[in-house]
Length: 160
Image 1 (cartoon, rainbow, N blue to C red):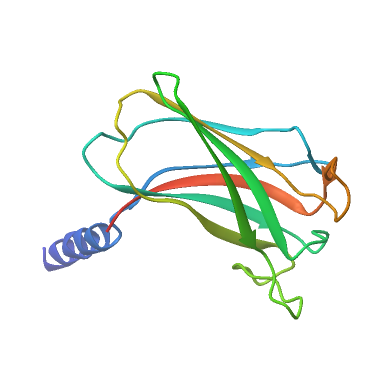
Image 2 (cartoon, one colour):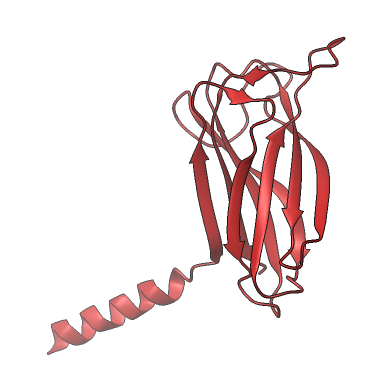
């Protein structure tokens, strides 16, 4: 009886401490380079219209990524059709070439702020499109196939 009570108490403690703050998370694999006009698209339902959330763009890169930063264009479409477009720049490596992000191998994961303190105004489905907007100096056309980005993801987390 004491063992059962102790086990139940331990399970309740673990469940209470591991309160899941992620409302939505998804990744999509990028194969054979991220093409210039290739949208990585995520569709999700608003978790609710009362609470506040932080939104993140999650990128996984390996040693083939040739730049120290990345430019992204992100379109967020609301259920009623309105679209917000943001152009974002993120640092991916330190000046000495050391990759930022988490990971013990050559694969690094970067959790990048997209929007902070978001309250979803409408119930229904939202669509988030992520494009890369990388350009070489002097080349207006941009990079047609971006190597080294292996996965693109988003996460929506409860604001604490």
